[in-house]
Length: 258
Image 1 (cartoon, helix red, strand yellow):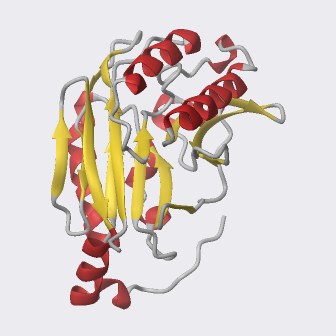
Image 2 (cartoon, rainbow, N blue to C red):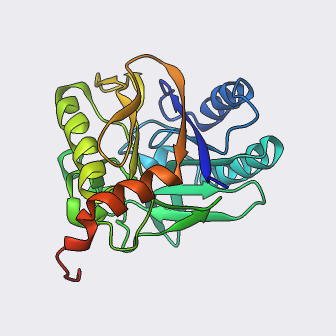
């Protein structure tokens, strides 16, 4: 039987540093999603927007949001992922959680903190990639600025799906479009880019451009509007492309340190 993964992207504006309000907004959006979706993806820092003042957020808000994700995932029988401000072991992280309907929760801490905005000064950076096996698909979730670093995304573990959640602003949106396409082509995997819309308190405009590219770089869905996008990922498409073209067989072999 063909393996399929039905995905929904919620491309939304965000309320500045207000986790409770953002959870309420996303609860309403989740209620409108069709019941046969397997995975829903939210933007980067979906409960606060891209804040460099995490001290303004109550330390317990991260755990509150994870519990909210677990409740929504179980109630709707779909996995849920997105990143948030998260306080742990005396440090703040830009932490992505992948929460499955059975309650299993896995996290990834953003590796490349965005120095241009000073993210490196207030958030600890992550040290490890993670791989999530979900419904027959191997998924690698990354965050925003990670997109600019192809070595970190390199498909050494034969993942099927690469996810980027982001708050990517208008002035550099052409880079977002180009790099998402490049990551899909070079890794021969589905690449999902989820951006926000609207304007934040600092005046930065976010134009959406959320998309899903297939293993050959073709865009399956795309939007600039506040909306929910749907696509079905097919394991057969990945295997056929890789078996026919065999580009991954010619990868250079090296290891990362640091």
